Image (cartoon, rainbow over all chains, first blue to last red):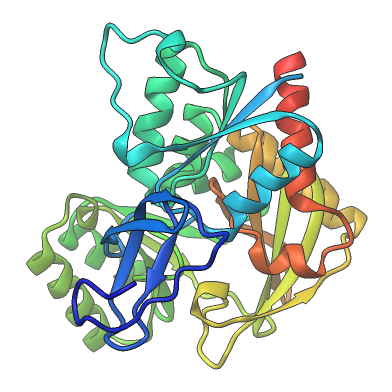
Amino acid sequence: MNCPECDGTINIPDDASVGEIVSCPDCGADFEISKKDGSKVELKRAESVGEDWGE
Amino acid sequence: MSKICIAFDRLRSEEKMLHKEAENLGHGTSMIDVKITQINTESKKSDFDFGDIILERCVSYFRGLHFTACLEFLGVPVINRFDVANNCGNKMFMTLLLKKHGIPTPRTYFSFSKDGAQENLEKIGFPIVIKPVIGSWGRGVIPLKDKDAVDAIFEMREIMDGSHDRIYYLQELIKRPPRDIRVISIGDHAVAAMYRKSSGGFKTNIALGAEPELCEITKEIEDLVSKAAKAMGGGILGVDIMEDEKRGLLVHEVNNTVEFKGLAKVAKRNIPKEMVQFALAYIRK
């Protein structure tokens, strides 16, 4: 599918799940898979790394 | 068969591994995205598909902690428990608990203002390591070797004015080989360990590019990890150990939502499977 940011091509693996992060190989933007119904996928901007992220 | 739920806010390979192992064991599974889950004071356990037990796996510490509080309010068993997450999520609370339980840990100095920290430093001297009380992956962990570095870091903290920046956590710089040991503890037992080698700097976090290498779990490591895990309240934890040249093994950190992707590839035991089995045994107790 096309990158919402730069219109580049983002490959979504068949086994990808909702909640997974995909990156645009062209502009580097990260997106979260928000919906997936077969080959129909919706993306939303991924959250940026927070101060409290980690283990 | 019991049903296990994996709560996440960013689906990583660890969460997928846990999901797969639960399915392989023949258990029902569900995945909950905490970011889009709503709970209120009238909520009931039956309103949600939380299964019999939840593995809380949020990458955001505060999100995971507050969600865990809600789960315990609803009476849903969760790993790790709220008090364990709270103990591990704050380096000062964690260090105090380690020391209180007689577990060897680096000498650590606490101050509650910039002036207090400067006074403390005059007594301690250099070098010293400053760490944020909240945070992970080595961020904000800085060795301080002279007064100029201290002035710069302290000034930065005042400008940022984060609520946790007012707490100054200063720790001795340990003389050690350029590596530390990460041990995965499940139910107070060490199940896998690796050396995390520095990629040049003094930090050894895998997230920063440290090279993992399998480490043998000795009796000493097993005992130390067991004590450290019990001190935090048990559950599934990542215990970090440094090898001090004079004092031997020191526990410097215990992590709550432990990452295990790298170690799982080389470990002899199946880490995600053991985590799932521990969770299922937990609800049978």
